[in-house]
Image 1 (cartoon, rainbow, N blue to C red):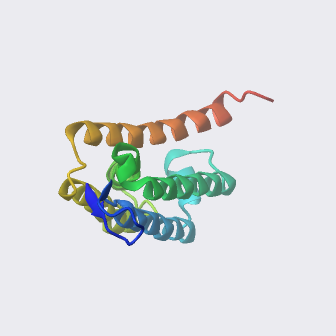
Image 2: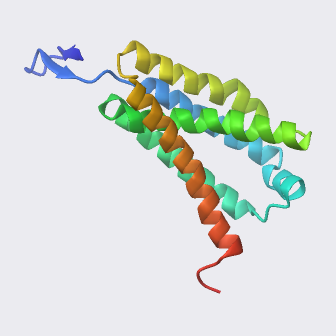
Length: 170
């Protein structure tokens, strides 16, 4: 914990290390990534490569949710490191597990792969490095943050499976 000597009259009060700046880099990487996916027609590629029934509306809703989630993680910072670092896990998993993996699987370029490899992976790893340096990256925090990142992906898969293959309302 760092000492807070900011002139507030509460000199010596402890506060958690700030992960926020590193996690705001993740948010910026998400913004650049969305631009690449949009400009290079990620939806069209998904429809062609996987016969996925996603729409541009789905694309925008998912990405709005990802931005809000990652911004919330950056705001949380060191107060709840496992939750905060789940955004870093989310982007690293997306880079490796989805974009690079899908490009290899389909032997075609998955729009978003360049920003995923050049921005997602490094910004996510950097956030974990900052957490480690601050003494926040315990084995428990690492496992929980990765688990939360995986849960985010599972949530998206489940909710769109329901939407397209088992709609609640017809």
